[in-house]
Image (tube, rainbow, N blue to C red; front, side, top):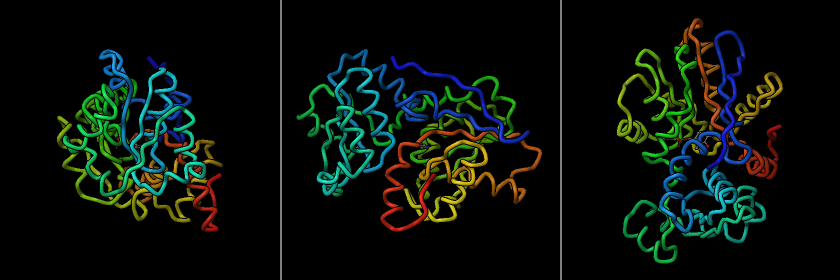
Length: 296
Ligand SMILES: *Cc1c(COP(=O)(O)O)cnc(C)c1O
């Protein structure tokens, strides 16, 4: 089992706190730890040969799975979206890190990667990786949601609003399930698309939640100078780093919600810092190439 460190919420002011879940483990960060926890337990109890999962070029989930595998001495396979990346691993901090952790990277064409949940394709993969435990892209499944339900503690029941960023929806589903009906959960999708709401509904038992869809900044892993400036100001002011793909977009949305009054001044707000900091290095390489301001 991986050990977790529990940390107190950090207050930015009287009514706004951050849960520093990005610090729960040195290498398996934030919500990716929560999502892996019960999957790893199950894999270990079944005595599988290793873990196999899916992700893109900068995936936090790939990095976390590779790190967890290394710690648990369990072989890992990462099926990576995009064949062209195979010759660029050295220039991609996420993939390089995963490989250095011992993960075997299998690069597949985008048209094939699309089949990542297709039972026929998975069976075909399993021919090469017999007795490997498959974890879906982004790590979201029932066990992941169970792990995310543990993000909230009894003490967090004093908050009126709980905020998180949303990718596949697994994390917010766990938060919704663990919240009081009187609390409101607000999710900030990091990508465009209306499919999320339905995906989340499949996993939750309450309707005390909403998605604020205006803070994706153009799409998944897209950023602009406004967001980068916001992140850098935030870091200087509070000494808390944000990641460019998820938590910066959430925080930006929360600040705007508070200043516009959409979030009442008197509401007690808890923002979950889900991690993702490993993505900063890769993002900075891309920003540098485009001669744009980098993340500090
Ligand atoms: C993956 C990730 C998310 C999104 O989690 P989902 O469960 O896929 O919605 C949010 N924040 C960070 C930092 C992540 O790495």
